Image (cartoon, rainbow, N blue to C red):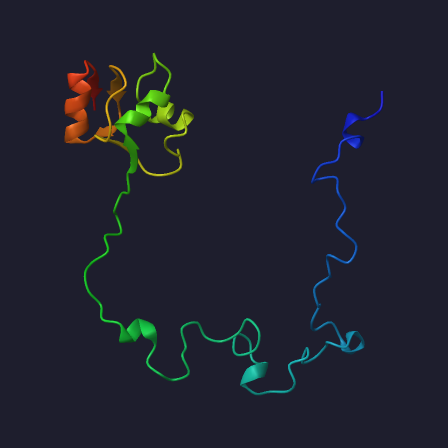
Length: 157
């Protein structure tokens, strides 16, 4: 039996187009290479130094001696480094869950309403509750809690 993988064309089996990839310039590999010793930077001076001027060089945020933007702009307020950004889910979006499913972080992720790699989920009172649901381990706003309880559901923190 012949190998089935050889018949299929995929991104892993396609060779690159001719001339689409050029090897990088290998600098500092002796006088015979043409880019040895000073590696095409000339001799001495600030432009011959690492990390300054030229392509990809320059000090970040250096504006040629004028006062940098980050120092010109007034500083105000406070940014909390421990802020937790919740993923918001509307009540009417719970209709996308299976009929017998509880509302948990896992079921919301399976339905595509939240992402598992981001912060905690929180139900908001937008729309109507499609049916009586049980919410377990998900934050719930006060308005959403009232609507869920009114529809005959339960909220367990």
